Image (tube, rainbow, N blue to C red; front, side, top):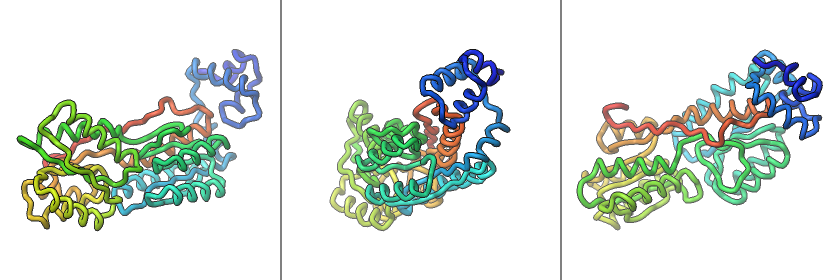
Length: 338
């Protein structure tokens, strides 16, 4: 295994310079730092974990976590991943500051500013897909505060990595499931959370692109938004079914699944085929009752823990994550394999 001395000899610098570069302490010429990191990468240098622990104790890192708070119980499992990783990182003198916001760009921007003023060194963010938030991420990057997005992503930003499901592929998968679970002409209503959340819109795009290319007997009748709110979902789903009696399938791309399914049951319709996401308790119950045909899962605990680990490693070593996208598994659950 390569040592700091070997890297220093090849780079023509002191061991102290290598130590400052690899432990991200700054005060090194950028060209020299890039050379040291390149040599370390070529030699497959692995930092000593005890050394990292000692360096982390001195750094006293603070990491921010900002997720959505819409009443969607899916995020409870994401938070479990956050808290478990937080306890582990506490042993490295790393503090995690956790915050929640709703589907509001101004509110999210204000909370990012609050975390920044609290002295965070990096941020894990479920971003509202809005130019205001992209600007905030880019502003943090300019200040040397890296951002990793989780659960949902954002366009035109300098975040360093994303952890979560491949939304477009999940939408394609949902279309394939809809083909398998329906017969003849299928009229689908899509019920989503927000058109300003990328994971919701990409799931719809993947679904629609797949049925357009491959399944002409499936038709999307209308798409409605429920803000991931169960009560709003109930009212709007019931209205959708009333206005479109031809509907015989529903595709839930986000939260509000329980409220929407209660509306289906209240309508007396027993011919509606339903596909949803995740296995929160109410969704599991609806699958077991044969109300929901299938649900697509996305490993929420990993979406909470992995971004924090990636951020911590980057801040300790100066090495960006090995890849930009860390996709979770596309896991299909039906009644028989819950």
